[in-house]
Image 1 (cartoon, helix red, strand yellow):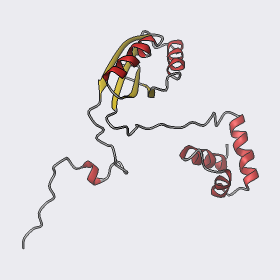
Image 2 (image 1 turned 90 degrees about the horizontal axis):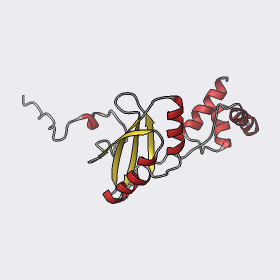
Image 3 (image 1 turned 45 degrees about the vertical axis):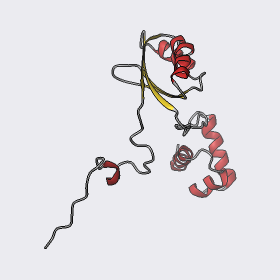
Length: 168
């Protein structure tokens, strides 16, 4: 992989829907040469696929549930079986393999507790190798609506007052 390939991969990671013409322009290639490189990156497995990342919904009253899953064992077989099974359920928006007290962290959005009970009963409790399920309902997302994490305004505690101008 040379610098052009790395740039192509970087640009596609930022926007996988970028047109071939725009990609070619960004990396300084003709559209046909750019497309050949992308096809080669796909064929050699560097680019394994494209996907849509689905963020939290903005449904009125939707509840976010964070779920910690512990497996009976942490072998490659158990992890693979669990991950294959979890991909079958669009109700599960995110799934992270974790370190620490649980093996996986999942995020689910539901309209009410009854909907979560159905997901717990019909999906979570039937997943292969699960030994423990711990669920928590989120109260609110403290970072929702922030455009730039780390800005001073985002770090100020709620109710913090600005310093009054000094009198001379």
